[in-house]
Image 1 (cartoon, rainbow, N blue to C red):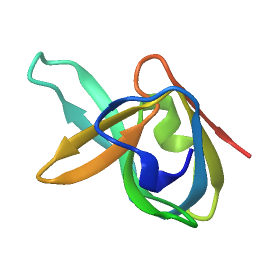
Image 2 (cartoon, rainbow, N blue to C red):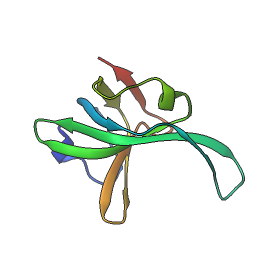
Image 3 (cartoon, helix red, strand yellow):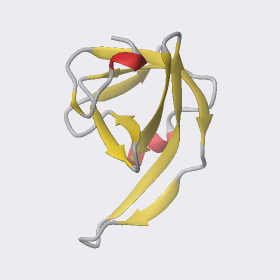
Amino acid sequence: MKVADLRSGSFEGSVEGEITELEEPKKITTKFGKQLTVANGTLRDDSGEIKIALWNEDADKFSKGDTVRITNGWVSEFKGELKASPGRNGKIEKI
């Protein structure tokens, strides 16, 4: 699957690309009072780019320039922009 093929919702299969931007991880508090860590960035392949969110332990595992694979992930839409993440049931790994 290519970045350009991703649509809002869960996806089966995998997408691969290079992390071209990655912010420093930051702590956030959910509306339910739970503390989480998130690092936002950009994933690019030869078809385009998409924003990514790396949560908790994944936020510290990856760096700008890493090539990664997201398998069985999730795509959300916020302010008209798509953002991919491994979600609860997916995974992300360096390749």
